Image (cartoon, rainbow, N blue to C red; front, top):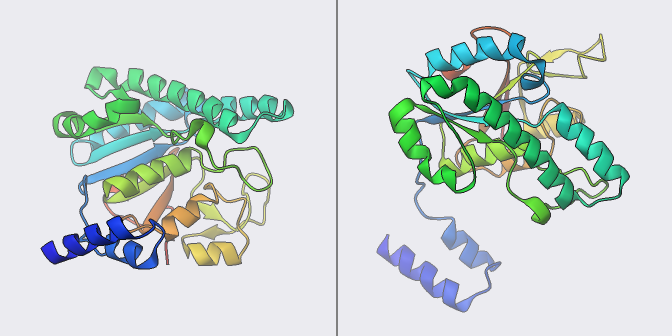
Length: 270
């Protein structure tokens, strides 16, 4: 290991950070998972939180019960209010970085809402530098809430044909799971999982229980239940090589998914 470290240090001093040999040496280090026992669950903004108490209260009860056996990092989506903001800002010809900040403000609001509902159980919402306290929250109460929007802000990479931020709350939650080396990434939505078409608008839509990233791309499932650019993040991952999409409106689905059951749709990196 010492020789590997010495070789990497020598390369870092001599080569460009895009040098192929340097990149290979940097990637050869043994994997280290920061939070290997934690699972990230993303609570959809439009699909769950915007529905109010009918959707949220049962899910809150399930989270409180299931956290006794699992460590949970709970991310929030932005939802309908963000879409309204995107519409106004895009109409004003504002750039993707500004829309990213607007979307983040709504995801933050939803994190606060969920945090208030779970406060009496000791489950808090954190933001920004508060993520440094996550291990303590997990050790003490087994759960913590965060805003799902990645903090790109003005540094958001623009999509090639739109000012809508390509990396939103699905990507933000997934990136957290990958960087912490978590054991699972579960998206809690209002559909049973992935379909061949949007089941809300097409009666001929067929349910897909399991699929790979390449298969999704080959089938042209761009209008899928997850942000499409997130699939490239999944394909390039070292730790979280699959994600699961479940229907949070069905009681028990989250619990079953956390227990390792194949409920909903599983999307694999390869």
